[in-house]
Image: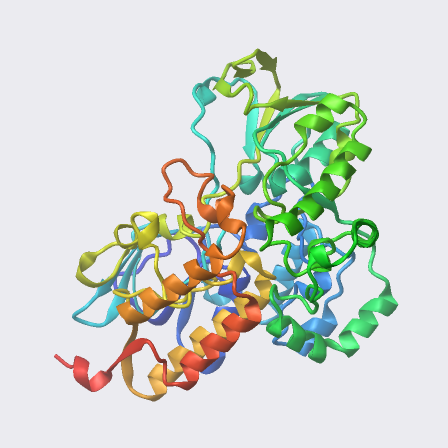
Length: 549
């Protein structure tokens, strides 16, 4: 049985490792460490496993990586026992998969649900982490592993008057577990990022009227979701060893990549044909993988951006609405979005689009939303306003390393965000981040990045134990070199020229800086492996004999 919130004892539990979060990162970490013989406990805020797929239950929620690649790959048995229903799996099915794995590996008995870690302070006298939960339970662990996810702290804008709204309001990232009905209601959706674009067509089908409040129009590509052909699944399973290898060596964690060709090498008619084929095929990489320079060259990028804009004009019947939906940033420099009937939804009689860049929201009133132009009466509001990405989940915990310095203090200011490999940070011994800032993380198939990080971290912990090492800590010089490399790679791309949540631009007062590694999953894996093979180059290891008091 799993442990429950409020279960206290008079002594401090001594553990080899505490893992924060029971999403896909936490589950695999627990499995690996337990198989190695380490006493491990996972602390989870929710009352079930699944992480982002536990919390994000909004209408239309789906993965944007093809489901056949969005698996754990460490177990052929799990791969062969689970079959996805469609090309892009819906949230309930992904959550079901997480529960299937947790049951299959008997993980719940070492997960403490309905509990939040409020503080974790490094104890320099004992080379251990002193951890406290929100019910006052204290734990001591040699290793602390943050499996908190990159997109787990919801960003609810502090709109004036929100407390006066007489209707119901929801955030896509913290959706109720019970069914929400919009039938016969006037609904407002604020935000047209990935979650908004997934939710809007579904809500529109049910609501009496839907008003979409858009600040920044987005490029979105059709998902072309469909049921998976059993014969296709059979072929994939038969070749998964080769597929796994390609995923791990690729740029984004999928077993294919861009054509080695510039968009400017092809005449317009050839380019148009390729883009049309990509649009009909659908999917996250269908358009961008036609050429290798869409993220690097402004002129090349414009060819793809112009194509998508032409598709919006083609689909949306009202020219004024189509104009409002025209994105102007470099395509691919915000999170690329895929959809089902998003643009088509604006052809419905019961859908209105409001440009809040032109007429900003001034306040939430008792009856709805008031912009600079007028008040819109609503029965329900949906905030599809995203997350405090990457650093936000870590800052929710009072994390303190050597000398009592908090992680938030260390990373204050965009220039001060620095890690070594996105796994570790100087001044915080035996603290590991899974898919942390400055790793490929959100730019990749998260399952591939999660497995790589979990395997690296758990192998490291095992190495320390077998070699009588008390602690491992990133060297400041190695950290500075890695962070500079991450920034240098980003600077040669168009990504840094767009305000996005990758840059922290969606959070008021958050320092600007590209927070993920754009060098690719394969390149990154190679670098991590080299560090490991060189005896953890760039880290300081402290032997057990040197820590005796």
